[in-house]
Amino acid sequence: MWYFIEDNQKRGSFSLEEMESLANQGDINENTLVWKKGMKEWQPLSQTELNDILPEDAPPPIPRELPREHLTFAMSINT
Image 1: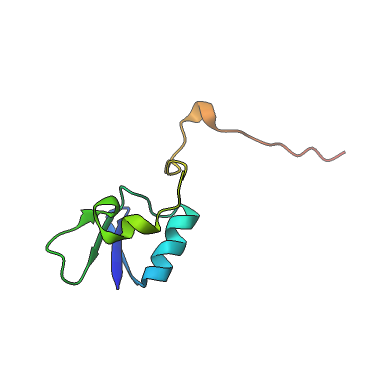
Image 2: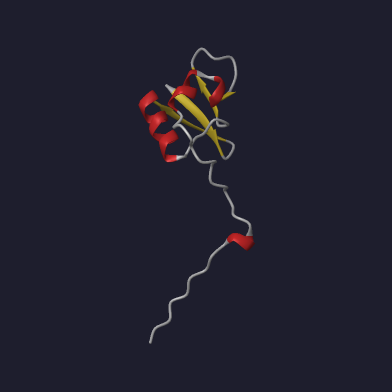
């Protein structure tokens, strides 16, 4: 079973299949710190056997917060 760090909190436990799904959804990436039983310390996903589950040509992770100049606002007007 695998664990990963998100927002300074431990998440898990996840099976290999669940980790692959998280990678495909973009929830984890090559820089995500991961750990499983037998590892001495947390490591970037790319330095573990999980590197093989990363989708090829994956886009970079979505930033947690977008800069204000990149935010788009929508307005609904009732007529």
